[in-house]
Image (cartoon, rainbow, N blue to C red; front, side, top):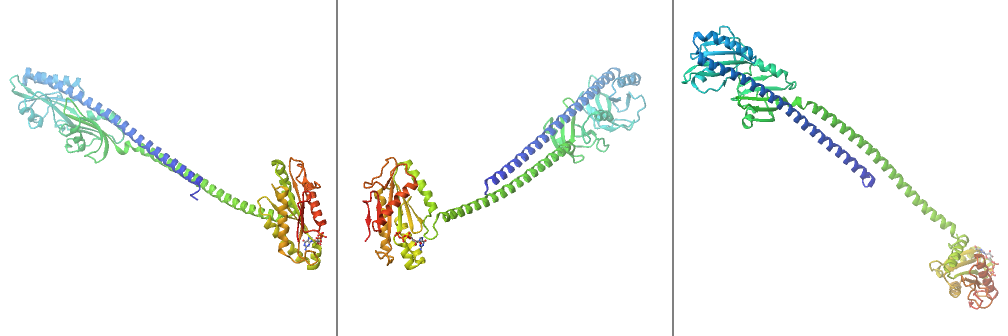
Length: 523
Ligand SMILES: Nc1nc2c(ncn2[C@@H]2O[C@H](COP(=O)(O)OP(=O)(O)OP(=O)(O)O)[C@@H](O)[C@H]2O)c(=O)[nH]1
């Protein structure tokens, strides 16, 4: 079945269509995935930039407040006389900067001098890390410490501080502002980072300042060994898929390091959420491709079956028509053949003579006709019986077949014991020669025929020839052996018959044609 070219074509076309479809779907799905990733990348890096800008702004505000506090403390001193003035100044500052939760001024011993909160703040802060830092460092920069739970209010705060130093460098104390963690929370809640999105704010040493979703246990923890921190150590800004150390979830993170402050920001969205829609639409595309491919395959199968059935029918039809053709040829042969002698019959003879006449007239070529009649055949039948007569006719026919062997010649049983031979493209002389060979051939068979004067079966033959275009034959004598160029079959037969009659009259066992001078005589 596969050898059929149409079926091969259908299979090839279907396979190619399915492949093209699958290829297109794969390309489409891949492009959609990339587009989704780029879109999320753009969204998360925008949020990271925004968070960074807000942290930057908050830190700048804190830095300005700290500078102001340090300057004032340096000039006014931190003694009891200046405390009330300092307190009201701090309260004033706090009112103007809502991102700052509290402002504090500590003396060189760690005892507080003034606070914007207006309440008594118990305890000594000399043990806090930032205090230790400023006491031992003389730089005027601001210091951001790990988030702590406020001793005064119990809420999570980020201490931002700077040292207060006299002009001679003497350590006078520490100015401290605290940023409330929920200040960041409020900002981040307004950002659209998806259902499972995360915002991570770290100090440059990997200490978590804030993480959304908020989890108290994570605040202050060290993520310096995590993938995000490592990534940020290599590049100050970027986007990539990473597995978070905190919850082991893979996310697309956009991260950045702040220029002026020791903060690291990372905003991520889970792979699952970001590719959720893409997965659903990819599934739909995949199912659609499968369905279309299945439909194509079903259609191709149907087509192949139809082609196969059609092919079988065609082959059967061809077989039947070949058989029919064979039968027809057989039938035609049967219809054209004489049953007894197997020579062409009268019907066939008439057909061929008509055709040859036309051909001779068209081509201007001579056409000869020989008519042969067995001599004293009635007596033969009477003497030897009808069956022997039949056998004699068959043997005479075999002589004709043997002598008339040139392509185009036709020997036929004309009727009873009479035979006719059409000899195309042959002039009178040649035809008489053929007739003579037949006559001699029959006599040579020496079929006994006692009643005949020759004692063997003999035949008389008359020859007539048509020379188209000349109007005359070559015969000289009576001129009855030739036919004009427009002679009909009947005329040609009559002329040959007349010569046959002549041959009979002249004693039988001889050939007559033309003017009668071309006769040959048997013994
Ligand atoms: N056995 C046999 N005889 C046939 C057949 N067809 C014709 N005949 C006989 O052939 C004979 C022809 O005889 P006639 O026409 O009188 O001529 P003839 O006896 O041959 O004498 P001439 O032709 O004058 O020599 C008849 O007796 C026919 O019966 C045939 O198919 N088989």
